[in-house]
Amino acid sequence: MDKIVLEHVDFVYGTGTPFEHKALSDVSVRIAADRITGVIGHTGSGKSTMMALLNGLEKPTAGKVLLDGYDVNATAKELYADWLKRPEYQNMRKSTAKKAIRAEVEKRRRNLCFRVGLVMQYPEYQLFEETVFKDISYGPKNMGLSEEEIRIRVPEALRFCGLDESLLEKSPFDLSGGQKRRVAIAGVIAMRPEVLVLDEPAAGLDPLGREQIFEKIRQYQRSTHSTVIIVSHSMEDMAEYCDDMVVLAHSGIVAQGSCEEVFSQVSMLDGVGLDIPQITQLMRILRARGIDVPENVYTVEQAAEALKRHFQSLKGTDT
Amino acid sequence: MKSIAFGQYYPANSPIHRMDPRAKVILTVLYIVCTFLCRNVLCFAAILLSAVLLCLVSRIPLRMILRSIRPLIMILAFTSLINVFMTKGEHLLTPTWQIPLWGSRVWRIKIYEEGLWNALFMILRIIILLIGTSVLLSYTTTPIALTDALERLFSPLKKIKVPVHDIAMMTTIALRFIPTLMDETQRIMNAQKARGADFSSGGLIRRAKALLPVLVPLLVSAFNRAYELAAAMECRCYHGGEGRTRLKILRLRFSDVFAVMLLVAFGVGIFFLNRQGIGYTMK
Ligand SMILES: Nc1ncnc2c1ncn2[C@@H]1O[C@H](COP(=O)(O)OP(=O)(O)OP(=O)(O)O)[C@@H](O)[C@H]1O
Ligand SMILES: [Mg+2]
Image (cartoon, each protein chain N blue to C red):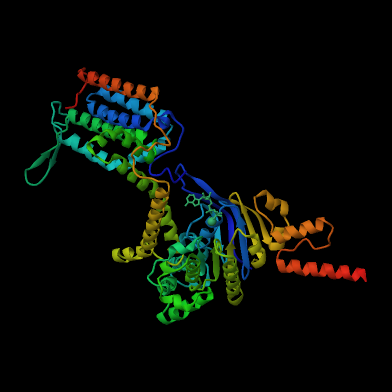
């Protein structure tokens, strides 16, 4: 099942100004539901731009963004013809039905950012409230949740992001950079989005912090069966945590598919300034030296497994 | 690129873009004087021609120039109406136009030929003023080059203890950070929109309140930037304009001087053309 589909999407910054810049051209992507999809690409390839299209922050210059098959940027006018035939609107007077459709479209537009939760690149700059608690509850409050619900969700989201509840009453400006990042992520997690989009969530964190954040994201995905999209520059993290991959280069898609499919296209990745994970490179070198290990190894655990098997088979031939 | 150029600056490679900004400031002042000197058809024809030439030389697309005129359409319409109806002259064009008001009162509309000329000249004057200043300065000079030029032009004022350098430095820094802060505002607004902020609905108070989540992080980051910049400047031993050398040294070239002289000659020409009693002469 495809959760999100981009159909021939173009996006231009600064249309009509001398600084016009095409950030995405003819991008078509399918993002599967209930999976973690990684988006990689060189700096300036349009990753962040693509993420901003997913929750309606930006509208594509051309093409469509579909969420569960619904064009998120469709206007009521464009939908009348189709929707008036639907059973729920068929029995109404035409003007009432049109009004209902307009209300429905407006509601969906408003709910889009709650359904698709976007954690922007360097989200620590968005904190503004006096306390961490208030800041995390900003999103849920905008959703119109009740006080009790918010009081449950906020500490939960905070704990989820690996922070201590004692921080709740602190000012977000007194936190360290990494803590701020986690608070910002918690602010989106608290909305419990069905699609969670994270733009370089681990950039600039220490190795342990990276691992924790990715681990938590995977936990969120596995426990809620939501769809998760992660933008990252680290091939190792991608190989470790993602099920699918999308590769962007020079404003366009150059590859998409499962991690194995994408990482097997070494020369293509090389051509657009990207790498395969280091461990995969190591395995390839070993293979070139005549050591019998599989080529499609993407994580350290897989590599250890493969090497163990290799040594066992060596022992087997010795005796 | 985007961060040094904002506002109206239109990057292109033209003689006007390459000109020394000081020369451009002087040219602009002269051009404004020329526009105000014009009083008869010949003068306006000449200056209109010069404006068209400027546009062509500057390689600014016509659409950009028209865009700068568009906001003035109301003002243009208003001035020309006032001129048409309020100018009194000798050649009445509408002797019999009367609009009945109440009772036996009527309103006689009097439009004189002079009024029409005045309206035409005013419109031309405003448009040419706009084209002249935008082509000579705002479209072709980055704001930072402009402050640099002004600093140099006003540097004699240092003698009477006007802190010209400091004012220029402050202006440059302010200008430099406008696009940065604008980008930042956009980014923070997007981040809050992603959490469901709604900036466009509700009454005035609600909208002002909705801006709070944008203003707080923006101020915080602006202050941080200011501290960082101050620290960076101190680390490089910045201590004001005294004995400071420049990275970009402005050099007046022959072509700059020539352009100024050409425009002065043009102004003198206009001055004499005004003396010719050709057609209607504006008061
Ligand atoms: N607000 C903007 N206005 C104009 N151009 C922009 C804007 N934002 C991004 N761009 C341009 O669009 C292109 C794509 O930018 P984008 O931020 O999507 O890249 P990215 O893939 O996320 O890069 P990074 O890995 O550095 O985050 C870049 O060339 C950038 O200069
Ligand atoms: Mg980015």
